[in-house]
Length: 153
Image (cartoon, rainbow, N blue to C red; front, top):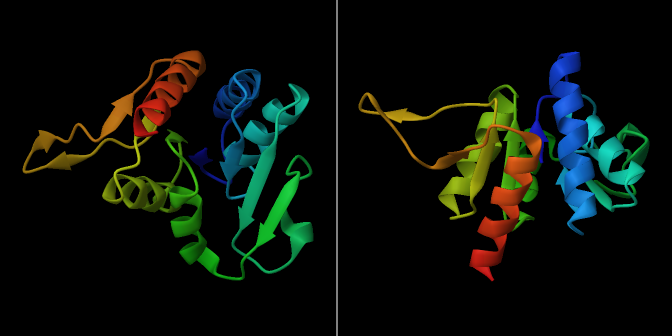
């Protein structure tokens, strides 16, 4: 799950639902471990009995949000986005800023499916790039991500 470290209450609620749905499906939430979308997704997953992994930009474990169960402090700053993007079978992107955009690009570059929920759109030569699979709801995003991940096995 990738998304901004700051978000609106509406986006926070969507992220929490994504985390909850991922946990109910038995998936592990991997994220950047900070606040905003990341914290909300972890809160949803943890509340549903799921597992959460936070790959932190800093080197201090206490930087993780309180819902991260497995903390990986990297000390790499934004370079940790490579690890976040490539530690999954599929990425769900929600909202976000340029850090999220970099995670989307890194995943797509490696052939990892990206499901977008109210996030970036990509255009090349004035035409929409179909790399991001658009979802209309958290449940649909999780369904599409699980299907995409299964197709990679």
